Image 1 (cartoon, rainbow, N blue to C red):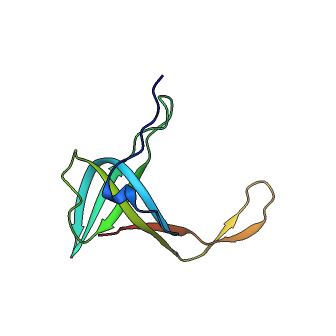
Image 2: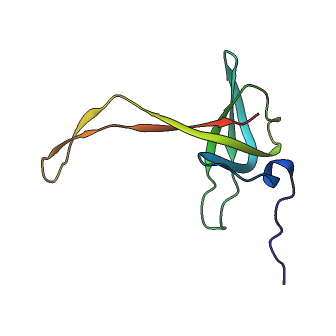
Image 3: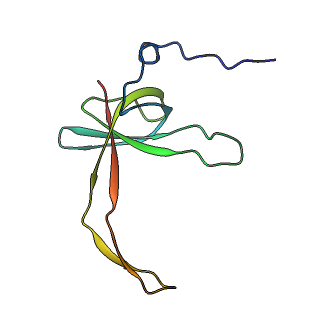
Length: 108
């Protein structure tokens, strides 16, 4: 019988505060825009029949090299985009849709 072992790292030792997320995965790609780095991380799939999640974390410094497995604590944020009208094909009802984008900023 094997038990799941808790993560023993400095990031995991502290409690995650509200609006923070704990991310573990493999760096898939990186890019820069000005002074900001964007790191795409692929997380392990929860089971063999599902897809892994892919997320992007903003940071000031490099989180690792492509292919590295990393653990990151990030602050969750977001913003709304421009609203648009959408018409339901079945009923013809027109509704206003306001897209929301989420952001993840590494706590460095």
